[in-house]
Structures are given as structure tokens and as C-alpha cells.
Image 1 (cartoon, rainbow, N blue to C red):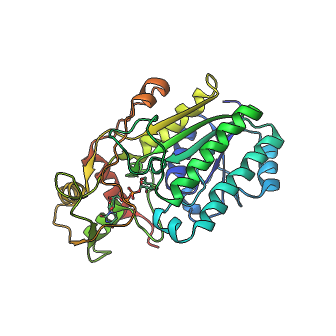
Image 2 (cartoon, rainbow, N blue to C red):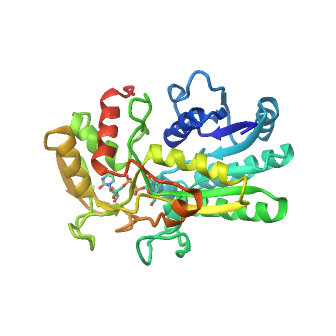
Image 3 (cartoon, helix red, strand yellow):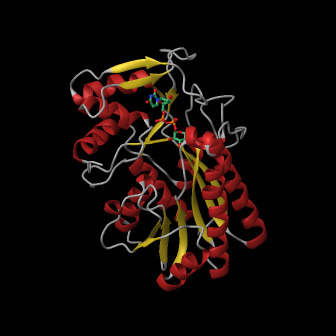
Length: 327
Ligand code: UFG
């Protein structure tokens, strides 16, 4: 805990929640964010915010040296599956090439510890659920392939240069820090829960349900929604675990699956009125069911997600939807 933690993408959704948790746990932090997706309001005033790119080796090395950085939590990335299919170059450039340069800035400064934001998208269409970390890695999207490429890069840098890393494969991040003044704001918004709640608040006329003919109980896709504050906790534990282990890969999910229809009906209970829904066709690339086994993260990191009740997750997201900055 001696040095400072560099949080790339710390002005984004999961990054800003992790910055809060780091501060609560007594860590010193610096955020590096190019603000292409992040928001300055999401970074606490007491945290230095360096506006710039992970690909800028000079800037990253200077930040590391000047602010005494000893470890990195790396969120900065493009993360939209659909967009990755239509603009793969942007994803390979920003995610893969950008991370390569970040790792090189770490090498030249002798910074050896990194916690990396990976994704359930590395599994693609899973052969079985719940999905454990030894499942086949066969991403069906460019986004998933960029994250898997980075996982490989970390493994190779660990073997050759002694890098210490943890890859955290997130399932569906959801909710907001209760009372924390931060939450999910993507532009454009593509994620189910914020879209459902925007339809509830009248900011949108309706929410679309993408596909009602999946081989699930109610015909809609099942996902594993995990509260963003529980995700943030896992990053602290992962950082601490790098004192004891050189590398690790962990799924972060609740191990419970909910269908799109269950999300809508539970949200209706939270907001207290019906939410307008329009049923439409499948969104390309969506697997029917993605549910994590989180056994390894519990056993090895001591992770114990506490906000796993769907209604509670939706309550925190609803509170945020009503109070968020209007963009
Ligand atoms: N959905 C709708 N209507 C919408 C938006 C989404 O029905 O307007 C459905 C999707 O089809 C999917 C579910 O709601 O079945 C969840 O969709 P999200 O877009 O909220 O999340 P994804 O599961 O597609 O994506 C998440 C992360 C990605 C990550 C992926 C891993 O956001 O970064 O999980 O599979 F790659």
C-alpha cells in the first residue's frame, strides 16, 4: 500500500466506483482518462486527474514517476459489442495497441503490478453454465477478441518480464454506489438496465426486448447482473492478492441469472408502475445465457459480493437514474 495506484479509465462507470473504494481503503490514487467515455464529475476532487491516453508512453511514464505509482488498475477501453463489429480497427487500436503501450510504460518505469478489466465476452457462446474460468475461450465479438488478446499479452509479459497481473472477467455490471453521486452514463446508452429505467422515467418512450424466442423459460436472454460496488471490491482484493501470487484470472458475477423479462418486471416493482416495452428481434451476437461460476474468486480472493439481490441492484440504479446529471 506504499505507492499510488494508477487507475486508467477512472472517470468511467466501473473505474469511478473502484476509485471510491480505493480511497475508502486508504489507497492513494491517480486517474488517467482521455475523457472519450468518462466524466470529470465522476472523479473525486482530491484525486489527481491526468487527461490523456494510455497509448502516450511518455505521459504514462511521467505520471508513474512523478506521482510514485507502484500498481495499475486498467479499465480504459472501448466496450460496446455492436460497435466493435462495425469498427474493429478502433477496438484493436484503443484496446490492444493502447494496452501494449501502457505495459511498455510500466516496463520502462519498473512498475510490475496490474489488475485488468476483462469480460465474460471472452467465452462467447458457452458450452455450459455456470461458466468457470477453465471454459473454452471462443469470443464471438471483436470486443471479446481484443480483451482475450490482452489477457494473452499479460500472460506473456509475466513469463518474460516478471509482470504480476490479475484479469477480472466481468459479467453484467449494474447499479450504482448508493448515495455516492456516481453511476452509469454511457453515450449512447446500450445497456438493458439504464434503458429500462429511462423508459420508466419517461426519458425514452419504451424499452425494446431483443429476442423472445431464445431457449430459455420465458424466451428472453438470461444474464448475470453484478453490482458495481461488488465489482469495485474485487479490484482491491485482486491488488492485494498480487503480494502473494504472480497471476490469476477470475470471473466476477453473482452466479444468478435473470431474464430480460425478469429485469423489466422487477424494475416495475421498484418504480411502482408499468414500463412500456416493445418486443423486437434478436440483437446479433447475443448468447442466450451467460451466468458465472464465482467459486474461484470467492475461494482465492476472498470475494464475497453483498449486493446480489436484484431488487436492491435496481433500486440503486433507479436512485441514480433520478439524480444523474442530464446529458
Ligand atoms: N437487451 C434488450 N434490450 C436493450 C438492451 C439489451 O433486450 O435495449 C438485452 C440484450 O439482448 C441482452 C441483455 O439485455 O440479452 C443485456 O444486454 P446489455 O447490453 O445490458 O449487456 P450485454 O450482456 O450485451 O453486455 C455485457 C457488457 C459487455 C460484455 C458482455 C459480455 O456490457 O461489455 O456483457 O457478454 F461484453
